[in-house]
Length: 236
Image (cartoon, rainbow, N blue to C red):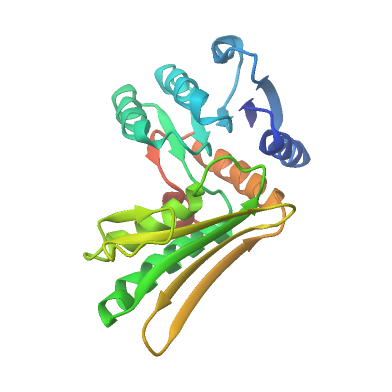
């Protein structure tokens, strides 16, 4: 598989290492000062986009418009996600966005939805805590938002989420902590007056995300359409 990396930070370098170890080829690297349009001259199978919120939309728009299969893990730009997905369908292109490419996290998403469908009808209230390293710029994390969306979908009493403690019972509280040298940890708590349930995922190494990205890239690059990690998980 011929891979173009859009973004060459910690995640880009981790993906490069995993991809090469699996005998894939990195045919282009688009770093901060490079123009994504350079990909027009490259023979590639799939582009992997991990950049910053202010550049993600432009990068994804270019790939989708030019029939370059692209997967993205950049968070903080999602107010334009529907536009990219609509463009992808109209161009018969290929696009997958995920807030987290860890296989374990995506199973965690499904477990959270299964649990929320049942437990919220029984008088439990929910909250989410996420802890990341101090270099992480977005807050809450995209993973925490995805978890929140899974709860809200199954709780008619919740109208949205808020990134702080709240006394508004219509809002789901997401608590974000940033600490030096910590693994990424997400915890969903379901609390009632007499008991509580917590489910938690901890990522110990960035390579868990890079491995997931490369697996998804190999799965998606010959497909057409808009996909999610649920499509990938349920196809395996």
